[in-house]
Amino acid sequence: MKKISILCGPSGSGKTRYAKEQTQRKVKVIQYASVEKCSNDLVKNFQVFIRNYDTLILDAPFSNQKDYESMYLIMQGKEVKIEFIVFDSSLDTCAWNNRYRSHTSNVHEIDIPNITNMPHAVVTHKTTKRKSGYDLFKDKFNLPDQITSMSWSLGGTWADCWGNVSTASPSSQPVSFVEFDELLEKICPDITFLKYKRIYNELVDIDDNVESDYYGGSITYAKYRCNSGALYRLLDELGLLDDEFKEGK
Image (tube, rainbow, N blue to C red; front, side, top):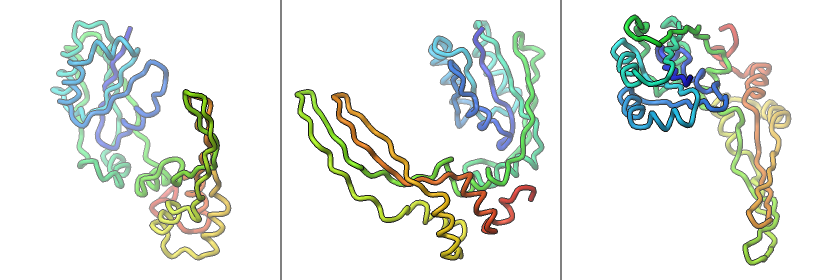
């Protein structure tokens, strides 16, 4: 049977992280800024969702019994299993997890779904984890897993439908990893040159990939890159992290 999972929990309780981890085939995660938008979209596109996916996960600011019942009514009578996933968390933990998420509102309690009058609905519980120092570090500086530069061309060939083939000239390699330098200036503006060089030499490398066109041409592109996790660990080792980002603080 197809399943609709509704994520319930305060801001910072881990709903979005859980949603991002659901990468199985035939699972669709949809995030909404409001319950109203979620309801309208579900009414309009329910059959499309169910036809294409086995599980639909809804991440919206559900917080009270009225929200839960409105979602249930949309799906009532349809051949789907309805699951309310409740993230059990203290407000202190949620506030900690939200401290660098500027787009979130104040943390507040939510109601636990009462499914007494909701046949075929179930409630499951998950425990909220307190974010690590590394997660807070990524939040504050808005970091992806890999910090990268703009790419440049190493050259190659291009072709067209008339059989023409020509050489694509390489472009100039940037003399510095500007994005990396700007990030370090934000994190540790007083870093010494020797520490900067150690971090750069240990962590920065060049990644390349080939892009091929339909007619057989291919061009290689390169970019500077640095792993965020490795940067966090080396900054900690060198004493360049603020205490708020250190594990156990």
